[in-house]
Image 1 (cartoon, rainbow, N blue to C red):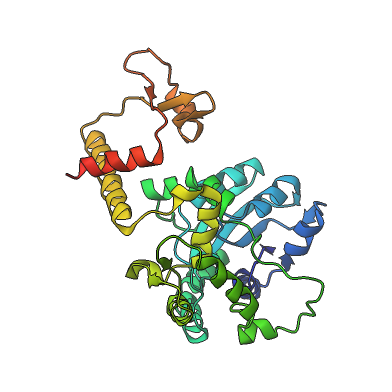
Image 2 (image 1 turned 90 degrees about the vertical axis):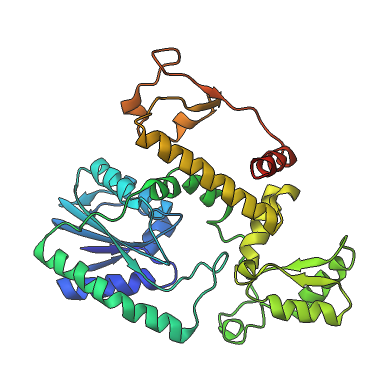
Length: 353
């Protein structure tokens, strides 16, 4: 059986193609997850799960539903994940999920599909989206070939970056970005789709004029980010509001994602392009130091520690094998003091003098 969960249609498209190719029944999880229906599902021996990628793993609503639902008759499971760019180390967590379900893990396949998380990224235009789907066809055929032969998928890439994104970054990303709070409609919506085709809800005159009135009270020039930067700069300039476009690399990033993160993180969340550059150099230096230590064979256990509820061991996938013990041999905790934002930026600046 082919099980799928879809947010905007990418996974449904792939699931239908796979079900047709394998001549398997198709099972849409969306309604069951929404209703909290965890009744056993008669799947047969082989299960193919198709999902989008949320924060470099399968969606939590899917893993949560699977954890509560019996897949009757299932023995083997394949995971097919569509994404805009990468799935990180999702395969490692899929393997754990399969083990929890007492299923033989047959691998995880990644298929690039049109980006659709508009809270942070720019959705492609229709022709570009069609091109991305066409480019996904060879990978989809490889997936079908493996599935028809009952073969495992080849292991996907797994490096330090992938483990970082699917590991400690995942809960942070979920907390701030994997939500739809900013997207809502009232009971007046009749589902005509006009706002989607015309784009009128994106640049509502009343809302923009209200925002412009608030921006007139801003201290200093307004910096505009996002893929609508030119339109916004022109609009504000016409109304006599001092403004400037952000650095080139930020103009095509989602203003919604930036604003949502800044609102939750507070005034210290927004930094200058110069500071972002310094942060990139600092991060690169830290990773190079880590690489040199590993190359030299230095794998001593010295996790950072601020307390039992705030330490590196909480996120480490190898804690069970490490058996860290403070004071034993070379094992030691690195106590890191809390640092204010401005203190941090001053320290980073001194590194690069």
